[in-house]
Length: 337
Image (cartoon, rainbow, N blue to C red):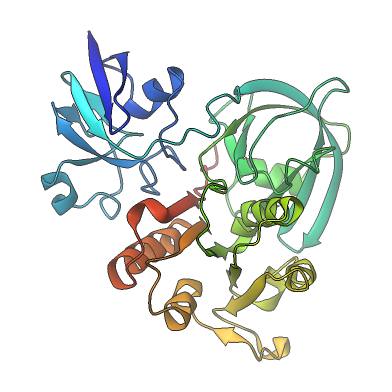
């Protein structure tokens, strides 16, 4: 059965099948709705159903509360229509003309930059380039099992190689393969670009980045892009990790300070041998301590779902950040097959 969907306030309309999610159908018709994880964890795709009814699907309850549901909210990556719908959300138009492609690539280099972090450099065929916005991600397509999603750590102007920051996750079949078996010249298949985690260049608001762990990767890409095109907006990067070694590109982040980027590293459990004199605690809490009012800012949060969700909850609830000015990329991990 097909249903008609209208998006407010743009008044874009399209027809979709009952089995599709609102997000997938919108993307298939060229309307880019905000999204991040696409599996009901990050909340980036949250919007309101103004008219009609939908099956809300499977989602994490901390992302979509009973109060949200009562007010008509839904996660469009999970919700499927049961009738014609009128929905409300802030569409992303900047990347609608970039096609999602499936391409082969070759492992050009593996660079282990921390005990549990590998930088993977991928080379596309000689006549190919992947068009993308800084901060988007790609899927690595597996012969068996679900695709593995990784953010691109390089900016579009630096696209000789696609760069991924891969953390070795306990029980992660693919990440363990990267660390123990993958070698240069191996062939992979990728699909992308995907995601709406990229810089909104039409704004003049100051930017706060909140990155945890390898969530530094998409933040790196966006900051390098912003510096490359000469954006003058204030940028403040908070990078949170457990111990000093987890800040695996600390020198690079400090280099950006010479270009005007404010940088605040935060450790939650520094070791005695770290001799850490900097900020301690949870990274989003450091932002709360530094900013009493975020109503005039944009926030880009990337990394562990608990960090992204905590930042969204507290920045919008306690610091006046408009919901539409919070952009997120929550990293979820695929279990071992």
